[in-house]
Length: 341
Image 1 (cartoon, rainbow, N blue to C red):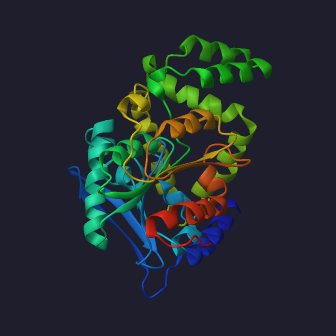
Image 2: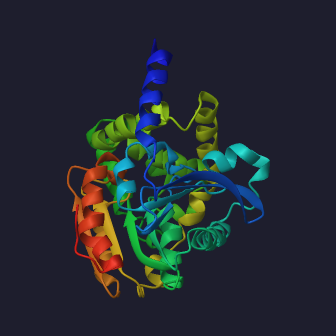
């Protein structure tokens, strides 16, 4: 019965995803990027719309599972969804042995190759850069270094790692575990210490899972948005779902490698419009460090907004609210047009 319902739901969602507009696009293929085949999907109802390049999070968590939830975005933007090495269909194609070098520098170089591919494929001078969660580490670097390639930067679930100096989120987790009487978990997290630069992949993963499962709103979002999107994705078979989860486990090695990143040391000057839209109740990437970072940013235009009642995955829990922000605050800056819904 469960599999039958899943099959019917997938058929319904597949119909929802159809793009029939005469100037629309719906294509997906493997492209040789960084020496391996990487999956790139391009979807939108009007090729005259701004082109958005998504830099997904995880690490290893392809955004393809969220296409049905963000279907309305494709009426106003052409969305490029790229499965990074170690993620989604890119991981499925090559397996663990076929992912090549798994470093932040390699992801950055891959992103630039993807950018050049999309610019040539669609004949556009700049892309609108949209990064979420772990992807914001690479996203900030791209936006800082290459304003000639991107029309604006939008970060959501924005990471502000700060070189491991800010321990407030670690302290908040310990307090939450103490309040909940979860002594074993608290002892385990306390033993790891607040210095995330000293963590290994297993510790990084354990910390993230503990944050997610001990915060009611984040845990509910994981179940009702992420897991549900994965289970009913019309773009993923059951084998594809298993591969998706294996990719996330494989890519956990990248987590601790990002913990030494210090965004302020890398620079707060951005020569392009700069936006951050954050869940107001996000405990995984808290809004206050993101707000303070935006305050320190120098950019032609900058803006910060909270999405009320949202934890991590804010854009996917409330895709309509996120689209409102994109249309009212970002698109007018990128196109020079008045904001519309």
